[in-house]
Image (cartoon, rainbow, N blue to C red; front, side, top):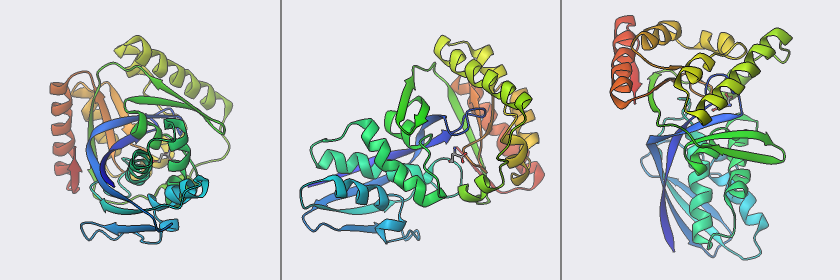
Length: 292
Ligand code: HSE
């Protein structure tokens, strides 16, 4: 028995919602070919020569399946062929996509014994492998689609938000930022006045999403805690942000832990214009990029 799962990229944090908000993109997506075996083993292969750890305990798709197998009473195993289409270290949920794709495919092959929240619980083991910390703001939107709020990870409390049609432009300056490194530079103490601004914005953003209030979404897309620190790792960050807003984007910022930058727009044509501005800005700055 075998199946193929397409696991799309995701944008975590949504600017002000560090570790608690995320959205699912249409593309790019990892393609995961998963086969059920009776060996009690997990065998992982990279389809296109991309160097991925083959030890399941060290692989973002393997670690969740090891946890899943430990909870099963049957003797089964999985063979996974990963077509890695989302570049690791780009900031659009590459590790999460492989983790989510693996658990969704495995669950399907087993006859769907687990619900989505249980699958997210397993998939978070992949995030632990990738970044040293469990967080669900990539795996939850990858599995649920749309925009999700992760109110808590222990216990898991996931709230899918009914979102207006939003269009996402993403640009990836061609450097790699490891999530673990981008987390290590964050401050552990936050001045209360910044925390107040931040939770005002998170509440504003969630309300704007639920009420389809684009102006409220736009003015809530501000980050007083994480962005000032992480943006120093991203070349041309401020220019991209300013130019995209002038081109009509509602707003945006660092995608996940970066270095990709994302912008939200209210229509496809604005989002395409915003993508062009991203390309133009990086071309003028002489920075190599890839855009989506
Ligand atoms: N919330 C996580 C972080 C997402 O920003 O570190 C990583 O993709």
